[in-house]
Length: 279
Ligand SMILES: C[S@@+](CC[C@H](N)C(=O)[O-])C[C@H]1O[C@@H](n2cnc3c(N)ncnc32)[C@H](O)[C@@H]1O
Image (cartoon, rainbow, N blue to C red):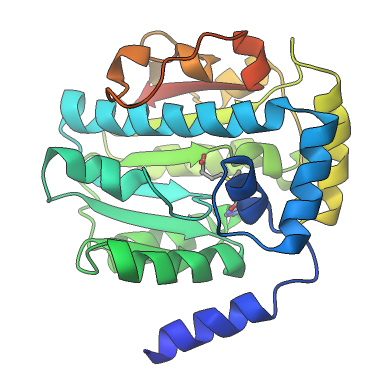
């Protein structure tokens, strides 16, 4: 075992004092990269709001379709996934590799637990020349971007697909996410895509407010936003069709044959999503 992997395992062993949002999300998805503390919290949230599992499943579906879209319709081969959570089946590097093994992917998460899991999982499933994981914060801005470009060997002049999926509801207003996102939009070269999803309190179950409040005991606080606030995160990027919609409504035709179509109430997915393009 390398020194890095040894450190990753130590991080995991010493991370059990509170639920990790990334691992709780993995629990919602039915994954097995979570511990009792995550499962206890996650189960309480599911009891309060059964839609939590629908949210996670449909949000991942959106991410997969958006990555396919970036690859197949725009030929993008560079991906930066901030707030990536735990790389698991159907993650960005696997979807990007569906259409050729030349995509570079940098996963970024500020939770050392998520990063440690990512490192272990990537060491098993990914190509270490093209797929990377770093422990960094969305709020690090230009410093983070520099690390991402350097570590991932990305060409900053070629289009990049930046994913901030199910991340910004963990950035509270005092942290001014709109300013940080504006900086990333500026740093992206023309032709780049911004892939974004966000839990909303507009037209969703009131239980979501209660769940968001309870996240204060986890590794991230939560803050819900309405449609217009979420749309504003795209700034002057051109929203590609169909705009900002419930996660399963975003280009369902891009789902793989084994991905079941969603036929429930779109609002039960709790999150809205869209893809913006820099001209
Ligand atoms: C719900 S998971 C989303 C995973 C994945 N992006 C998806 O959509 O399936 C949110 C992740 O964001 C991470 N996160 C929260 N605040 C962050 C920040 N300020 N910087 C980087 N990552 C953050 C959490 O640690 C967690 O792993």
